[in-house]
Image (cartoon, rainbow, N blue to C red; front, side):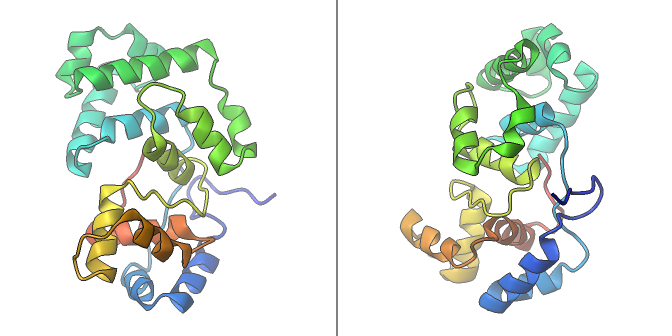
Length: 212
């Protein structure tokens, strides 16, 4: 099996760009405008999930600020470190009460070994999503962010993502509100590279790559 380098784009990236550019002229233009950036692997499972929880329902800029404060206050945002933090210290980083609970529950799962990230690369997308959403605070969107940013799965379409919805409306529907079935049908034309299409649509809104 070919492995992804910790510093390089996924091994499928060039192929995905070519095929998406061939089938979709809108994506072809977005890809052309962003020639030297790509999705990069995030190798630490707990931090990928924790950062996705922090990012729920707030802007990318706000999420980055909260995450940086959390890392500084905890000394690295690792499970044991977060479990040692008192609730006021977590709140002072900018976390809501609910997100404090979610991060604590996630940290306890990792510390106790009830989540086993070493098994996740061998699971298919839907099976892993089903396992992850059993953890408090992890819904389908958070699980999909893990699949994209940690496991680099190539064919994830996170339709609940507000940035993806906005980009699809802007580029394909003249800014009109459309329902999930229409967005899903559009996304089907990008398979098996829906993660890559999503990543470039995010770039069309914000050229600085987000990371989870």
